[in-house]
Image (cartoon, rainbow, N blue to C red; front, side, top):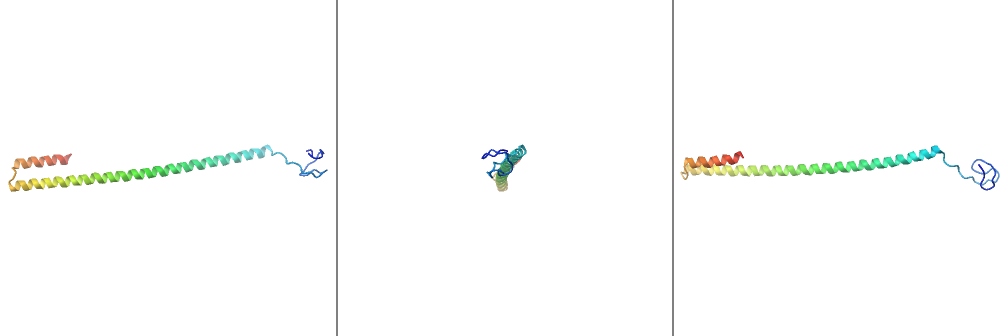
Length: 125
């Protein structure tokens, strides 16, 4: 290497003739390659971390949505069962009313059978 100050051929960190600091050597191809690989590795690691974070976020959202759907289905099932119970109670009241009317002689047997038949048809649906 030549000293940029005096022009003499020299080596080391300082010129052996004028003690002028010599510029450092250029990085070798290997060092350049290692830096490039390290940079690519960091970039890949960063992208992988972003991808995993996004997957985790999507999994949380899917879990929350599934939970909401399950709660909604449970509420709808409870409403349906409550309506069925209400309908069953109403049918029983109509059966009791028909029986009382039959016992009291307010309706004939044929009419009572028709009313009871209508009630059982509604129950079957």
